[in-house]
Each structure stands twice: as C-alpha cells, then as structure tokens.
Length: 270
Image (cartoon, rainbow, N blue to C red; front, side):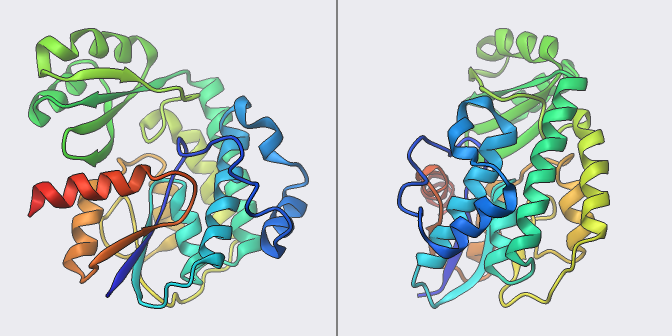
C-alpha cells in the first residue's frame, strides 16, 4: 500500500516526548549539535519547542519500517524532518537550520508582536472575509472547518470577538509567541534565507510536498524561506498526496494531530 510520510509542526510537542529516543545515535547527535537540551525548556516557547519536535520527528522516522513511501510532507516546521527523511537535507545541516529558524521567528515575534487564532467551523468564505476586514492573514488551512488567522494582536482580538456572529465559527486563540506565516515574520524569512544559502541541497529519494505550493519542492532554499510568510495549505497538501497515489498516511512524531486532519479532510472529500 503506497504511503505518504507526514511530520507534525509546532503545537504537537508534549512533555516526555523525548523519552523513547534518548540514547539513540541520531537523537543524541542532535542534542550535541544544538549545544543545549531543548526538552528542559519546552515551556519557554518557540526557541526550544521547534528543535525538540524536529529531533523527535527524525528519530521516529528512523525507527519506522515503512518501505512503501511514495512522498512526504511536513506541517510548517515538519517540512524540515520531511526533507531529512527524503535525503534532501543532511541531518546536521537541518539541525542548524531549525535552530536558526526558531531563533529568527522568536526574535521577529519580539520585534513585531502578533498572535494567532483558530476558527473552528463556520463558513470558509466568511472567515476569509473576517480576516480581510481586520488586516489578518489566513495562516493555516488545516482541514475542512479549521482555518487559522495570524496578525497583530488587536486584529486577532477583534476577529475572535466577531467570529460567531460574522462567520458562525468558534474562535480559539492559540498559545504562540507571534504571528507566524504572516508578513510580520519578514525579518525571520530574511534570516532563514541567508542560512539556507550556505546549506547543501541533495536530490531526494521521494518527492517532498511544499506547504506553499501544494506540490513537490523545486527550489528548496527559496521555498523554505518564503513558506515562513505563506499560508500552510495542509488540507490541499493532503488532497495532492492522495491524488499522487498515497493510500495511507503515516504520522511520524509526537501526537496524532495530523492523523485527525487526514481523516477529516479525506472523509469530506470522498
């Protein structure tokens, strides 16, 4: 059965997720490269959550025995683990990129305050209109009935207050440090682009689908940097993977958030 490997993004982290992987070669190598243990500081946010989640996702991939994968994809941060799994990025290089990405996003959030809110249910068109009204970005299209808006705090607060009446949606503010996947991340994208210019890119063993294009990566360096500013088109990515022949989706990393999105997206698209 043809499989697609999928890797979670920030938000899927949980305390204790490192325990199965302690003592494995790649995981311990990652801690050595980082120069610190991010699992001791998970509650401090982006700088630690992203590298921690990346290490667990790669460790889960290495322990997996799937031999029928035809493609891979990752949700935002998960793209880096997907690219390692496909052999496009070397593990050591990816650790450095993830650390730089996490630091750059945290710094951008400090300089340009913002936040995010999930809009659950409601009419998609109306949620998009609500975003436009308040100068917000639709940062994630995760699954049917699950859009995430990103932008300045005051705009998010206003959209959340109007969600039920204007769009029939339930607003759930997210515990994030900044307005990810919005123009407020421009400083982070520039920093990441500079780091990517120095990073070797290899031919992959399987295609890795980009969140920004909903198609296999073509220009990995450019697309990874630009994806910090673009929406995560996860619902469309899942449909594209199924269209490419994926019959099952294997989530590699802590939790099962993506598996739930797969079930909802494919069930409603049937």
